[in-house]
Image 1 (cartoon, helix red, strand yellow):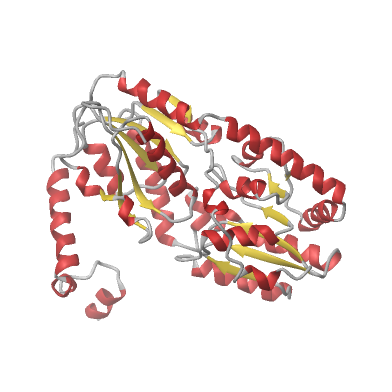
Image 2 (image 1 turned 30 degrees about the horizontal axis):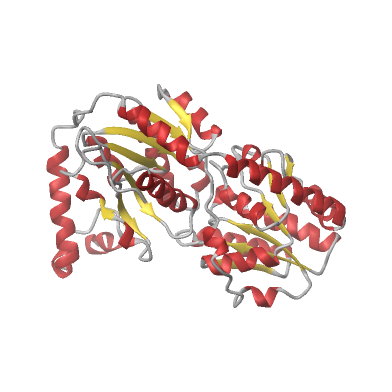
Length: 413
């Protein structure tokens, strides 16, 4: 790692949440490594972080007074947040990295709060068209959306996955029970509606019923906050009468690596992806991929794997069988995936990032933009309330309940 350049601008990152084992988290940490290796001082500011990563972060409120007009702030935008709005109000040049926001209609009837958050996030994004010196998508699909929204200078910061989380070792405690000679279909992703887990389940049902009764489906991903959607999926499994569908929840990196090792096929039916890192994880682990051709998925596949563009579960089941019943076909698919992964790895992520940062540094320093007259007063009030919550929780609980909450309604009654 290079020592920070004396007197040079600092290049920091800000995002709402730094998650463990997710695509954005891996990218943020990779960016920080590349910035520090290039000699820039670089910190990560967040609202929240997984406890395993908290030591790598600073609270987003610590940006105030630290970010100066000659610095650069890389702002990861995936949903509206207090961290995002605070970043907007600070001085300094800004690079926005857009990870895409799922269209809110996917969450209607499943998660009403996310309907609101995604709608507001997409609306909030448009406020940055004049604030940013540069807006980057982590895929060409995302870059094109930034163009349509009116960002003046856009580009692509390619996702070059760091597979160290899969190569550090395997924990077979979970996967050992599935390593029994049966065919294992697998999908990895947060259990949310746009991922279309129901389509994966229907395709597996047809495959198991018509082609291979000695098969199972492994569904890996957190369902926290989406228990209603998970219940709907369990109801679908019960209605179909399909055994051997396993919801494994959030797993460790070591467990995930072991699950890829025993997977025979990765089946993706997602309708909305900004990139879909699990696809290239499956490439890396030598698992053939069958994926629905929507949004950024075809570009991520880069001519490899097998794409399909229809919803008929019987047709998807026939494709699964065609891949898994012919070792020559399967080997050809894996070889094409290896070639696509080689092309992805040959992209010089660090040089591309440095080029974008150096280009923005050639722009003049930015003073803080104008914000609403009461913005900083509200910021200070929130800080005081947050301090009460952390250090005097009993007093905080004595505050009035937010309108519409269960306790507020009960007290009114």
